[in-house]
Amino acid sequence: MKSIKLMLTGISLLLLCGCGMQVQKESEATSANESKGNAVIENMMSRRSIRKYKPQAVNRDTMQIILNCGINAPNGQNKQSWEIRVVDNPEFINGLTEVYKKQNPKAAEDPNFKNMFRNASTVVFIANDKSYDLSQIDCGLLGENMILSAWSMGIGSCCLGGPARFMTSTPEAADYLKKLDIPEGYQLLYCIAFGYPDETPAAKPRNAEKFRFID
Image 1 (cartoon, one colour):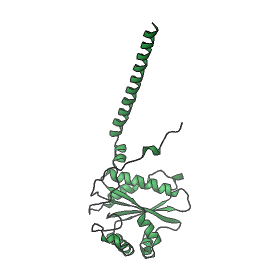
Image 2 (image 1 turned 135 degrees about the horizontal axis):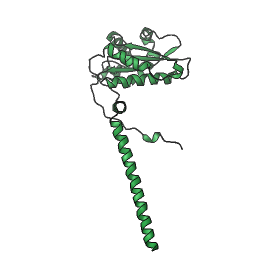
Image 3 (image 1 turned 45 degrees about the vertical axis):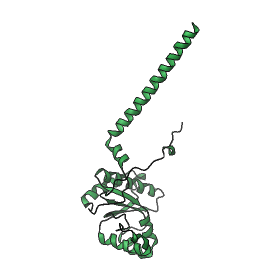
Image 4 (image 1 turned 120 degrees about the vertical axis):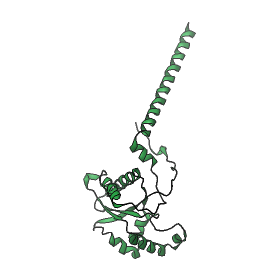
């Protein structure tokens, strides 16, 4: 009798475990299906940094949409602690690139090198308010909004810190920095290259162990 009871108990536990695993699998499958059907999530997960662009320029009407998405990013106390400059003038981009090449002659040895912004035809320069200690975060959120909205319209982008550092640390680039007309109290933080992708890079691995839930 005892052995029968033990057997029934064991069967019940197996059934409960099986049901629990099935519910978990169904829940995971539902979450995956919901993600696939969510345009916002799909856009985020499919985005790639683009480092090869077609010659076609991004028109200003499209850039205006991207910029409007950018300035609607969340930001501390609605300070909007950023200054944004859009450059699509080849003379500016090519002229600054010539300065860069003189300082970095090896860059010009690459036959595919056209300009210092990954050959993009449009560059957005972002400056942050030095008086607000969280302004760099605001500028990062601004950039992410711009990048994701651009991607949703088939426009690639790449965040670039090197050109901004070059412009702020190289005396020969001072004239180009001045042309951006960044107000006093702001500093050039980074820039974003925009253009139509001429490559389809694969996703790079991400480390999910970097986040965890704390009970």
